Length: 239
Image 1 (cartoon, helix red, strand yellow):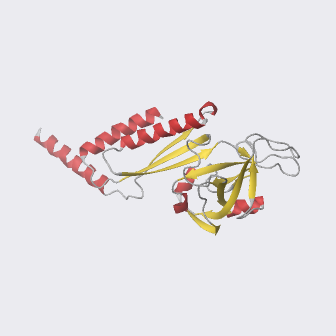
Image 2 (tube, rainbow, N blue to C red):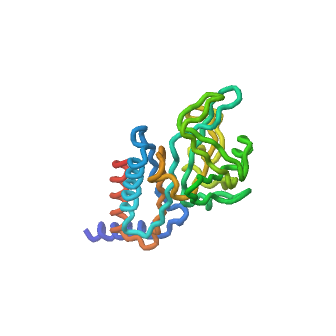
Image 3 (cartoon, rainbow, N blue to C red):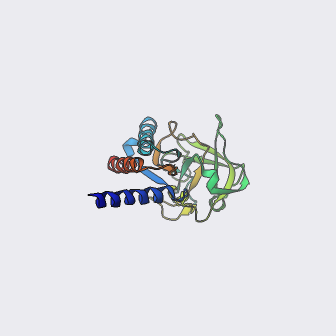
């Protein structure tokens, strides 16, 4: 009995030491959600993402945590190519995007009531032939060449950037920071069009969300580790 108790205590101490010594940069939990078509509406998507955020933070309630949320809009369509081929894009709202990219021209978007400002990868801007000061007319449904867009969203390009190479934060972006996919989900896809934080959630339909939590594990104990482990299992089941 005493031997088993000593072994258990030693094992627990080793676990606590290992957790407390975890590199803060590697201690991260990602909760990614792709919403069904009937759940992308403004109110529904805001509620779903809020629930995921609450559940993720609850799993680490015993630890100080920082949270980043990246949301991606439903598909927007660009003007068709001269041959009539369709092409699409998307808006990306991330509260810490600027930490993971280098601005190459202009500035980062700001919240403006009269216009939606965007920044996009420099490579994407080159493909689209735009730069700071340009506008893009987006539509929620495909249009054929020569057709007037229905309920267009005009966005103002205010900056271009380069995603930081090797930065895993760009796995939160549907294109992984590549800026272009010749055969996206349906059509050639350009993006992201990064908007000011707070532009999407609760204001526009959202198709995908990533909640990234970074807990501070320096004060971990056997009890808090066990609680977080159980809570993570419940979070996986819920997602």
